[in-house]
Image 1 (cartoon, helix red, strand yellow):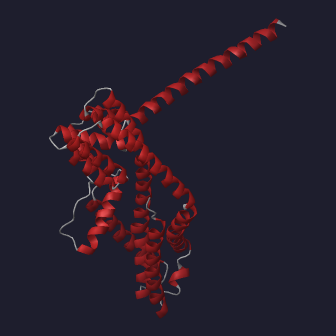
Image 2 (cartoon, one colour; image 1 turned 90 degrees about the horizontal axis):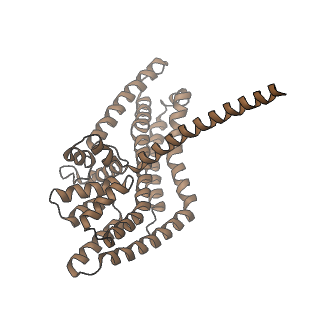
Image 3 (cartoon, rainbow, N blue to C red; image 1 turned 60 degrees about the horizontal axis):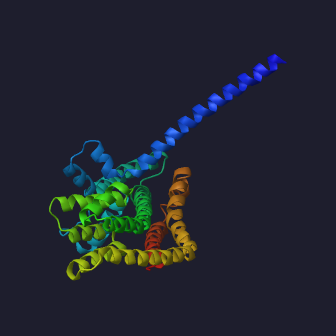
Length: 333
């Protein structure tokens, strides 16, 4: 009997020690994870010893520009691409993305042509066109769609964060902080992406920029109406006076009501948006997958005269369908 009691006591002691150690380890991991999430990218760079000039240069590296030297029909596309890259938090410029995509397209095209020759098919106009389509889909369309998805997710996150940031801003003003100090408080309390964005505004103000100009640049970078209303409220208050905290508190209520309506619209249109994404990505993924698994499925008919006409027609119809789907699911609230 004493041996059984001793064994049970030893087992309970082992179990208790393992349980306590595991709880300590998990608590440490969770605490560090929560602290790392509470620090935005700008604060991490400052903590690592980066200068304010380096931080600003990194955060503004992909700020949308005018592209005045480019053809007019490409300006809108390049600006949308640059805004998407910025929203996806990629520290690269649009020219660098275009260069990487161009190099990847050339390499993939060369590998595809080499693979066609290695499998015993002749290089005809149809097979070359097929190789160009495969390389374009794999090296250009898929990366752009992935970057757009990441950027859209971060845009939704900053829309969700903005009313909370307004509440923190209002409480700071009522506590007696000036506007610049309240913005600096947001840079320390808010997570990315809005924490780094307000940090960039704070740094620009420190270097002599006007508050409204810095906030206007922030609104243009993200193309968000909520931030534009915030800028207008600050501008009107500077000209007419009044309680800025009360104005921003009412603005936060309006933004939350607008966001609630927007989420209802998104819920009602979720089926259409998912259908749009599937109709956009599925044809490209199916085409690339089929070509990689069984290239002869396409190469065996690439010499047919109707193949080039059909391939070009399908590409044109795909582009038209993509534009129509984007117009249909882009619901403004």
